[in-house]
Length: 331
View 1 (cartoon, rainbow, N blue to C red):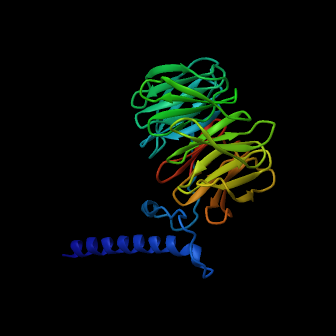
View 2: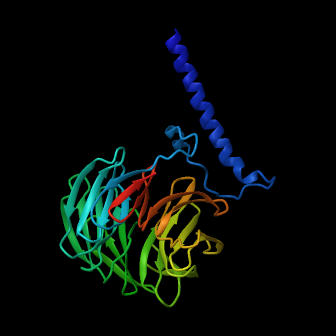
View 3: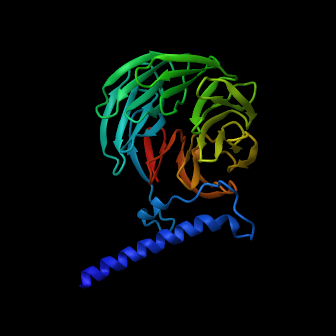
């Protein structure tokens, strides 16, 4: 009986914790007595399983290839595109165990990496190509020509969107890599994100920092919006788009439905923001001088973590992963 009582009590405790966390998500924005913003992203209740009661040092580092840049989660594993050695690394997400290093090609300069639900896609800057790998084995399934200097890609549920330095956006059918169109954008596009309906393209060329909103069905540009200088990474939080502006050390928050700027938030002096990811509650931004965790409600810095030359950022459902010079850090 005692064992049954303990189990029952434990279930009650977890239920209370989930209920409290749900209530916190609803009331955080109302502490000042004002109603919460409609559509604001709620806290991620799955993170209660981490038993992360206080800000302990839980950072762990794992070695990958030379100069990892893009990073992605495939539902079980972390993949990095290793720019300087023409490879892709695969790590088991729960403990960082290396599961393989796969050669894309000498001198191709892998940059972005994206998961389509079954396969991994890698953009190769020097080669002007995108490589498709089987996620289970790392076997190369095909290499497809796109524009020059392809960047960080996005998957829309059926297609892969590739930003090219030639001021174009290439749409590839994920099933077979067929080119479904090249669409004109502006200012040297470098990264993309999908909001459930549209593709957002970060354009960080010398003419100024903007992001363009592109209709996924036909590639029509629906709007172009100013952000900070030399924007790089972009992420969607379920309601808004977040853009890391490497040139001026800021992060811009845009309303996805309208493109309106909801805020521009400065990081610490010397930090050059690069990659962005959403963890279900907060925004994580890598930079040249460490990683910052920002509150989605007001853009304030909730925490800072060391680690120079941060590039891509990914969330695995419980932890954040950041690509550094020769390693990835897990928070």
